[in-house]
Every structure is written in C-alpha cells, then in structure tokens.
Image 1 (spheres, rainbow, N blue to C red):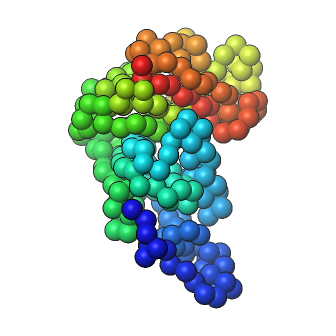
Image 2: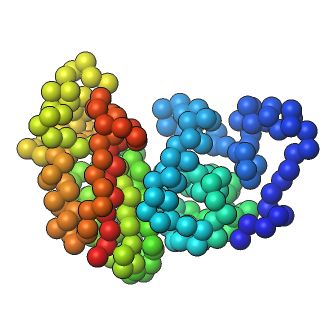
Length: 271
C-alpha cells in the first residue's frame, strides 16, 4: 500500500522542476526515470510518462481499479508501471514479464523496493529480434502462473513482434491465466483491403510491403519481427475462436488513418 511515508515532497519547487527536467525523477513518487540506453526509439521523458498515462487510461476504460490484479506481458522499462504509479493509488497486484533482462533488472532495482506489489520477472523466451539466444520456444511455452490468476492482462507492442504460431500459444495461455470475466488489452498492426495501398507504398513510414502469407505482412525483409502485421478479420477471428469475446478493435494512427493509439488496439474478454 502507498502511505504518506512513500511520498517524498521537495520543498523548493525550482529544485524539483530542475530535477524533473534533468531526467532524475517521476513527478509523483520521485522514482528515477529509465536511463536513455534502455529506451526504445530515443523516447523522451515526456513521451515515456505520457505513454504510461495512455496505457492506464485504456485499462481504466475497462474497469481497472486500485485493487485489480494485472499481468503486464512485455513490461520493458516500466511504461505501464509508471503510468499506474502516477495515475492511481494502486494497492492491487502487478506482475511485469519481459524477455529483456536489463529492463527487468532495472525495474526490480528501481520500482519494487518502494512498491512491493510491483514484481518483475525475466522470460528467457526466444525472439529472433529481441532475444535470439532465448532458451524457450514461444510457440509452446507455458507461463509459470496459476490458472485464473489475474483480472487483467496487457500486451502493448508485443504481438507486433511475434509470428502467428507464437501469438496462438500466447492467446491460449492468456485464456488460462485470466480469471473468469478477465480482460486482455493488446496492440497489433492490422490491415484490411482499404489499408493495403498505404501499407504497400515503399515511401510510407511503416510500410508492410513484404508478404509472408495471405494474412501476414511485414516491414523489413532483413528483420521481419521489426514490425509484423496481420489481416484484421483473420486475427480477430482467431481471438474469438479461443473463446474470447471481442470488446474493441480500433485502428491506430500508424498507417495514416485511425486515431488514439499509434498501434491498433484490440481488447477481448474471457467468457
């Protein structure tokens, strides 16, 4: 729980602002912000904190509250964790999983000592882009988490770097791990016929001109998992086939249309 002893007030606001601008602390709990070498795409402090706020906002739209339990698959360097710490007096249970050991270790050292309900664990799962020496196969991996163990599951920018058989295994595991009525919030790169002209334009910022099969396209011939996209109806159909109820499928802005998030938002519920 967060009591008054967890908050560190700085009496001189000029000093406080200077520390913030110097990338030392987040605004609410005065935790250090992630060092730049850990961040993706040279993410700024402002963007890091804003992204966490946006992620939390999506979860809250679907009932996430102070005593919920959350499995954050792809927790990275703590975007969602910081969003929760900034945005609410969270007393529930948070478990962050990631295949990048340095990110997990930084979160363990920085967040967990003062917020013991936030735990982080490394997954040594193989990924050709992010963890090529990983020992475990994402197509068959069973998470060491009890059945019906979490109210919510979040996968922000995870399925955008996974092949279809890996996603199918994750969907099965999410179905097992979520409690009845539990909700999964995820992002994808999705396409349909209307999006294809923009996706196959070589000049586009995130073109998907390479074809893996009829429902899978990718951005880079040299690095397919840099960004991989799936045909919308096919992927949402697979989610439904696992017994989930589809709550939302909203296009983001990455393909030049959509709104809200950059990647496409897909939210589904365990029946």
